[in-house]
Amino acid sequence: MPTKTIVSCAITGAIHTPTMSDALPINPEMIAEQAIEAAQAGATILHLHARNPKNGAPSVDPEHFRYFLARIRAETDAIVNISTGGSISMGIEERIAPAAEFSPEMCSMNMGSLNFSLHPLADRYENFKEDWEEPFLRGSENAIFRNTFQDIAKVAKTLGEEHQVKFEHECYDVGHLYNLDFCLKQGMFKAPIFLQFVMGILGGIAAEVENLVFMKRTADKLFGSNYHWSVIGAGNQQMRMATVAAQMGGHVRVGLEDSLFIEHRKLATSNAQQVRRVREILERQGNQIATPDEARKMLDLKGGDRVKF
View 1: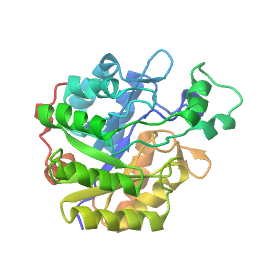
View 2 (view 1 turned 90 degrees about the vertical axis):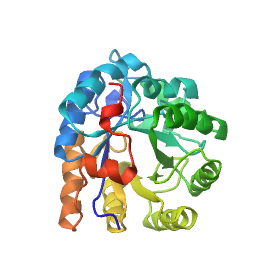
View 3 (view 1 turned 180 degrees about the vertical axis):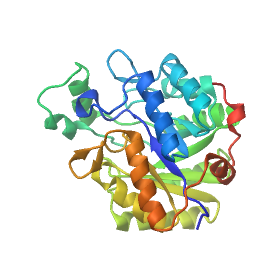
């Protein structure tokens, strides 16, 4: 059991679109403000994507990151985690460009390719604010979110070796744990590793307690005591899965990337609202929230003084 629980907050992501919630940050100013508020509410790690400020579409242009990274570093001590996911239509070179530019302490990394489909979301809305939204959602029905072993090796070398970045290893199914085990044996990564069990995405493992227990048991078998783990419960399973994970000794992730809601059918007003809610739940059941410096020690990070923003 960890002595403290790390709370990650995924601020905007590349799944939800502007039509779905007015609270979703869709420009650098909104991303910066919501990230800072989330850190003030207790988020230990800020998981960050960028958006095109003209239309809110997912972006990997380093210039779309520059403003909010500088503000976040100036106003918080939170650990910055830059996504290498980008969007399902982007190649690996595009997706790692922001992290290679800014050299954060952490980056996310999908531990395999998968069907990552958002197309059912398109049927929930009659009209969209931006022209790109509906084709983006419907097109995911015929898309594969690619992360081959070659892609993973490239990220490990470019970011892990050259920038001393540690990874949030996103595992969408049990097979991704075995992929990570193979990569560890190839020397791509060093312990302690940080696993993120991603549950509830169409194309990945369902957000069910039985599946969480199985994922944890498999990770124990493969990695022993050389890892930390967290859970994402997509959509309406966010708080439920976080609560159970923390009871099992894991860490948690919330944020508008993973769910737009604060409770059943009620949209969240901000990322900070979700952080406050999960913090209240965890502290009531006896968990203590890790500070950024405590998390840096747990995860063996290089430190905020070695980033390039």
